[in-house]
Amino acid sequence: MKILVSNDDGVYADGLWALVKELQEIAAVTVVAPDRDQSGAGTSVTLRHPLRMTEIKAPLDGVAAYSVEGSPADSVILALKLVSKDGVDLVVSGINEGPNLGDDVYISGTVGAALQGFFYGIPAIALSIAAFGSLNFDIGARLAKLMAKEIVDKGLPRRMLLNVNLPNLPRGELEGIEITRLGERKYADRIEPGHDGKRQYHWIMRGKSEWQSTSGTDIWALEQNRISVTPLFGNPDGSSRELLKSLAPELFRKLLGNRD
Ligand code: MN
Image 1 (spheres, rainbow, N blue to C red):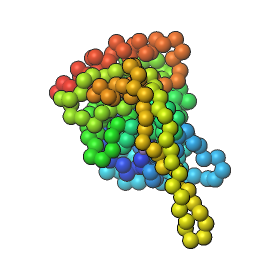
Image 2 (image 1 turned 30 degrees about the horizontal axis):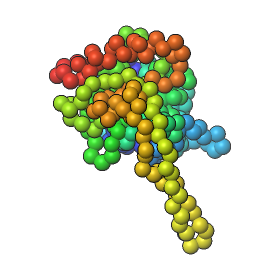
Image 3 (image 1 turned 120 degrees about the vertical axis):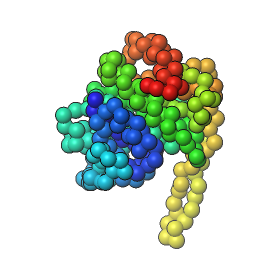
């Protein structure tokens, strides 16, 4: 199995390497990711200036890793066109520090990287921990490995992008895996003015979210201490949603178990 890993927190982010460490057990892993934090870059693709890509020394043996002076989407495009020319079986993006829930998936660089995989007809998973601060990436990384096996070995539908959000909880406090749809929130962005000595500038500050917690949404699942898996795009007949629903209990059992 060949897996491409990217993210939006930057190529040196802890969440990315926690993911790679776990995925290495079942796949040849290549990393191509932005050289810096690109959170909020969404699906942005750089078309108006050239991009530099540099091979870096990976913190784990046996992984080819590259940093890209560009967006998460740029990184995946360069990876698929230049680095993994023979193709990959799966694109995994993350593990992001912070949630990517509801409407926010449309500005998420984590989802933006995965979306490029989807565009190229490759199954893709975006993973985020829905918390800030001291994060435990182990469970998310383990879940990514279990999902990779399901998707690649069992041949789940090819045109699929799964957005996964995990509560930042120890295994024993998790209540399950829920197949969800996107929730909604009221936007509360705030503009913070400042002056650099010459000109005025403006910071866009993310205001406190007012999430609408409707049953069956990703936001609701997290509130129930459940892992949320939201199928995004593709799948017009809902068949892969039903398939995922049938797989979720087994995935959760394996996630909590000691062995894979
Ligand atoms: Mn991020």
